[in-house]
Structure formats: structure tokens, C-alpha cells
Image (cartoon, rainbow, N blue to C red):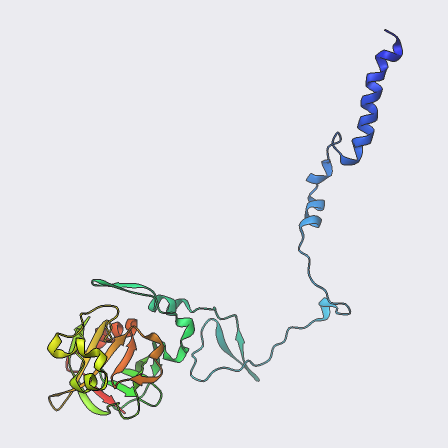
Length: 278
């Protein structure tokens, strides 16, 4: 074997190594562990518009309009600084976690109330405690038919406010009465006048036993029966599975509430509570 034949295999390996050196296959990239290089390659890239010096851009600190009646929160606070009154908004959550908890799915006796899509309801009709000076004693229910709100009067000029759906023109009741009794998951027995107007509900009339309690029952999860001078007015405060009717005048005269709200009201209202519908 000649010297050339002995050397030729090594020459071929050297040539191959030179050809592959551009891919760094045989030469390890020791610079990849350099901290300075790591920071440079992973640092965030910011958009810098042409002609704008980011060091000279000042934050805008101007008053932000506030909705009347909205109390300051950690997301919407008003600062009183001598010589300047302004508000700062810190980014109100897309969905209020408190409302999500109040109107989420809940198990109630034998039934499970489904969550209410509160993002599709005007916030003014969601349950909240408000300032409400009134001559009525605490424990009284006041229904404002103009604003579609029900107030449960509390001590100290406060009230728990709920959104309600009311009767159409000519069907609503107004006046002063009393909550004679309350019922959990009531049976619906439409009065004869309603059956005569809507013959399709005759199967649920009083003589036929009414409709069983349940998620599809028009009275919902609770009913509070309104009496006047000892007589049943046939009007009720009740829950409804039709959450879209809250804030509207679409019912046959009763006061409709979101099921989660009527459960809350039921637990607050004392026996023989007074009610004013104005």
C-alpha cells in the first residue's frame, strides 16, 4: 500500500469537513450560551412610528367622563387633588366578577337555575345596592314602573335595586298593597281572564290543576302574592325564565324578575311586607 493510498481517506474527510463548516455541524456554537446575546435575541420588539421620539411622548392625563350614579371602584376612581379634579380608569373588566357570581348557575332545591347571560342585559337592571332616601319604612317594596326598577328599602337611606319586567299598557296594577304570602317554586294557575284572552293556556287553568313547578314555569323560582285590603289582586312578583323581558313592558301585568334576583328578594322580604307600585 502506497503512502498516497493511506492518506487519501483522511483527505476526503478533511474536504467534507470544510464543505460542512458553514452549517456548524462539526464546530459547536459556544456563543449561544452568552447572556448578552441571549438578551439581544429575546428582547421584545416595540413599534416605533417614524418621526416619533418615544422619550418625548407624554401620557395624557385629562378628565374621563363618569356615568352619573356609578360609585367609584378600584377600576374607576376619582382623585381630589388641589386645583384639579379628575378621574382615572384602570381598565374595567369585560365582565364584572361580582355580577358573574350573582347570576351564575345555582342549585336550588330540586332544580338548577341556569346562568344568565348578563353581558346581554343593560347593567342598570342588574342587582345593586343604591342610595334611596324614602319615607317608606325598611322592608317595604317599591316598584317604579317608569324606570322598570324594584327597590327593597333598607335602613340608612339605602335600597337594594333590581331590574323588572312589567305589564303592558292597560294590564299593569298600581297602588299600595301587601305581600300576603310567598312561595318557592310555585304552581302556575292563570286566572280565567287570562285564559279567555289566551285559549292555548287552558290546559293550565285552575280547573285543570295549573302548571307544575319547574324551569319552564312562567312564575319561575319564587312568587310573592300581592293582596290589597285582604283580597288577592291576582298580581305577583315572580321570577321568569325569560330574562330578556326584564327592563321591558311585555308581561300580562305581574312584576317579573330574573330568577336569581327573585330568590334574593324572597330571602329579604319579611312576612306581611308592604308594597307600593307607582
